[in-house]
Image 1 (tube, helix red, strand yellow):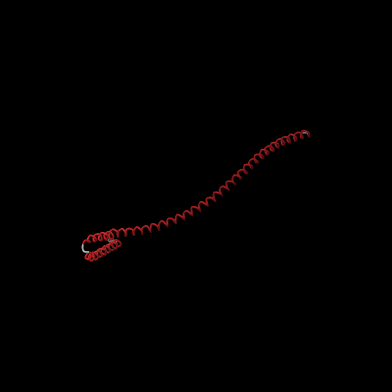
Image 2: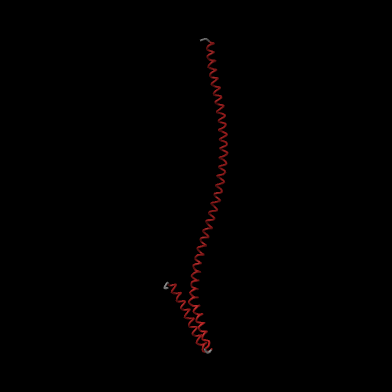
Length: 161
């Protein structure tokens, strides 16, 4: 092979290598453009992720406030429950007192009024005579009624009735 043929062969290989290098450069440019698009997409995703992080932080703060409000409401509800218990106990005591008063009214006061009214029927008798017997009799009846009421209360408290 001559020198010129060798040079032609070398020149042919250089041309092939040049073509291949051009294709590699084109591929590199295409990859560079694609890489640029990927970088832009990553930056966009990073910005969106930052917004999501801010939203999560805001929601976390709001959730803390809701939890504090719930705790406050729970404390207030406990106070209401305690107050309700106290009021229920007081109402039970009032009911017992009312029951006692009803018994006194039914057993003593109503009887005493009836006895006094019956005593006034005897007014046609002599005033002196009526006053002596009526007063003494009325006092005895009032006392018996009061003692009867006390006895019934004691029996009720002792659980005998």
